[in-house]
Length: 111
Ligand SMILES: [Zn+2]
Image (cartoon, rainbow, N blue to C red; front, top):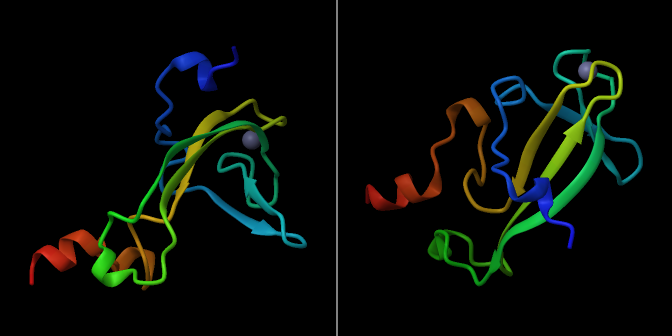
């Protein structure tokens, strides 16, 4: 049985953390290698559905959300060999500018 990252932890390292950018061409999203430059595309080697369930994260502020989910991707840059992980989730940041945003749970708990 194939297990994502052979069952090992898959948190992104500092190279990707806060520096990973990307873009769409049509409706497909591509990640760019943070060490090679902004338009060097990384391969997506594998993915796993880390969380998938009913809305539990700040439901009072996310009335239209259908579910809570987190997808984790294993990325590889074929040019420099950088390999890392990134997650896409619909929990956490919900709006605003990234540098100025506060997580919804922190905002809702402070009321
Ligand atoms: Zn690279």
